[in-house]
Length: 510
Image (cartoon, rainbow, N blue to C red; front, top):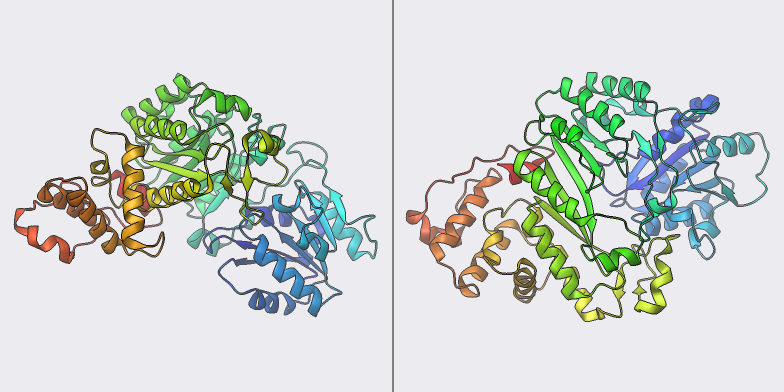
C-alpha cells in the first residue's frame, strides 16, 4: 500500500493531472512509496473517499483548483472525520493565496503554497520521519529547471492508458513576463525555460509511444523565439497524420522567422490560443495589459489568410472600465479578423490577483463562490451581466461548436455581429428557457426558425446552410423541419468531418 497518495479532482476524465505527475517525478526516493489516484468532479465525494481509504495512506496530497474546490472541501471534511490520523497536505493555485478563511485550509493539516514540486518532497520526508513542519502554511521554494536541485520532467509517468484516452499536457517553460491583473500568471515571474535537449528527448519518447496530440501549457510559448522555433521544427520534421499541437501565443509577436515555419504545417495541425481580452486601450491600461492591437490584427489576418492554424481567441466580459458598447465593439472587431473560435469569458476574481484594486472605483461585485465570476460593475448592472453570460454560452453552443459554420454568419449578415447575436441569444432564451441541455437537432430547428421569422431570410437559403452544417459532423438523417425543403436542397458543398478527439476543430475546417 502506498504511504503517499497524490490526488485531485479533474474537470473531466480526459484531463490528466499534470501537476500530480510533476510531484511524483520529483519525490526522489519517496516515489516508490507513492501513487497517483485521479478523480473527476462528476464523481461523488463518498466514492472518492472510499477509494482513498482502501489504500490506507499516511499522507494524502490534494491538488485544489477553482473548478474542484467545492467537492474537494467535502472530500477533505469527510476524510478527516473518518480517518483523522491521515495527514492531508493541500497544494494548487486555489490555496496558494488568501488562505485565511478558506474552509478547506482549516480542515487540512498543511498547505504548500506556490509551485510545490520540490517542497512537497521535503514536507513528506519530514512527515514520514515523524517531524511536523513548523506551521500549517508552507511557502514553496520556486523550483528551477537547471540547478543543483533541478526539476525532473514528468513525461515518462504518462501511462499507456493516458496516451490512449487523455489529453497529454507538456510545458517548455514556466512563468509569464506580463502583469495582467486578472491572471494568476502575472504573479508567476520569472519565466523559466526547460532544458531544450532534455525536453525534446522526452517529446520523442512520447511520439514513439504513439502520442499525436500535445497541449502546451506555456503561458507565452512564442516569447523565446529560438526555443519556439526549435520545438516547431522538431515536430514538423516528425509530422505524421493526426498530429495536433496546441500553443498559447502572444498575439502581437509573430516575426517572419516564426511565420515561415508556421505556414509549413498542414491545415489542422496547429491550434493557437491567443488572449485578446480587450481591444480597448484604456481598459488594457487599467489592468496593466501590454498589447499592440495593430500588430494583433495583422497577425490574425495573416494566420487566417496564409496558414491552416486553428485560431482560438479570448475576450473577457466585465473588465473594469469596459461597458457593453466597448465590449461589443471589440467583439465585432475580433469577428472581422476571422478566428475559428472566440471564447467569451466572464471575468473571475482569482485569489491573489491584483484586479481587486479596482473594486471601489469601478463597482466590481463578484460572487464569493467558485468560480468567483463577476456579478455586476459600475458600467454593467446585474441583469445585463446575466444576459451577457447567456450570450457567451449560446455563442459557444452555436458558433464555437463548429456545428453551424455556414449558418452562424446569417444571424448578422452585414450588420454588427455582437448586436445581432445578442438579439438572437435573447430570443433563444425566450424560446428554449435554458442555456444547456439543448439537443443539436432542436438547436438547429430553433436557429432555422429565428432566421426565417426574425431575420426574414429566404427559407431555402437558410435550410441549405443548416443542412450543410448538419451533415458537417457526419450526420446523414433528415431533421423533420428540413424535410419540406428537401427537393430544393443541393448536396453539401463541404465534406463531412471525421469523428475523433479533435472533432470540433475538424468541423470548423471541413
